[in-house]
Image 1 (tube, rainbow, N blue to C red):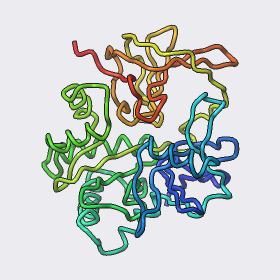
Image 2: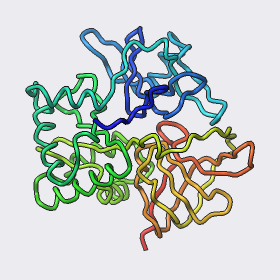
Image 3: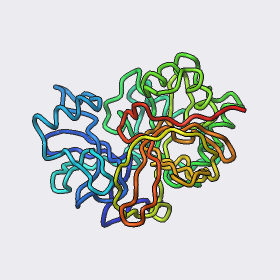
Length: 321
């Protein structure tokens, strides 16, 4: 197996961490936050297993019962959740879960579809060693309506997986999202764009498709040498909406997605919401709405899209010529 984890801080985005109280958080940060793991509460214990919660429910529950997991980052002037390493009972790792499922007979329809999907991706040059499994399947909580959420480790492997998805669609081995799956995707994302705009952007990303009417998704996690440790402290200045041109899209599918743009005030856009990952390509003119942040040491500014998980009022959209 390739080494994807740092032994001193082995937590990566798209991992799940389970606390001693049985709360399950999705990791959202590559680096420690005051010696804690930056994350967001996604599942709470529910009789036989776990129940998924939205942002509002998660914040409410933590405020009422577990305020120690609420976290205000002074570094990025934002609120999310964080768990001390000593409070983690189980670290759910996507690559281990995928290997485990591949070595056993499928237990349900979704697992059968996963077993069918991977050889198709392998056929187009995707190595299973670069993949993991997150979302409900990571903790064995999938339902018949669940998606298959694949993680791809490394930028090069991710681009290969996108290309494989495109080629497999062309050859009719998997399908583009039909109108129902696209509508479902649109409703889950709660995007600021209208449905037609949303679907146009999604269709050209090749980071989602369907196998036997089950949606699957590929999300990228950087390898250790692919992201820079950002030690700066940022201060939020206020909202901004403007049009600009994309100068560099090399990190458009990263987490957070990063776009270099032709704008002096905020030459960089970072998007923390999955909706706007891979949203725009080099040379395209976009309209963008987000929150301006200033680096307190250098005074340099950048624009954040997704300053809250739902990113209300914040978006990136291509202005079609």
